[in-house]
View (cartoon, rainbow, N blue to C red):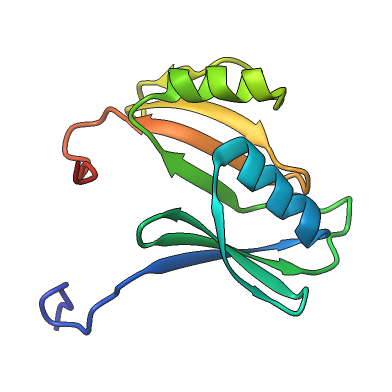
Length: 135
């Protein structure tokens, strides 16, 4: 049996969680650099920031051994990566270089590293067939 959106219970929102070493520093970075808004915090153990109406990023305190790579990435899809590049530069947020087009994926992308070493991608999907956000 194939499960489809019509045959399963609804998924109303999404939250992606990441372990970080300092919740306060993480919150300050994402609020300042990307304008994400705090919507939930619990006893200094977890915070959840809202990216869009139904999309959230959660962060939990935890030990991050410095010699282990951060395997997750936070990806923000935008229709104006160049504006994000300028915005971050104006704030003094260091990027891994200017945005680049990757034809093999059909994306135009800018890379940033957060205070815990996670990659933040700001990308524009240019590939045919990508479901665009409702305007």
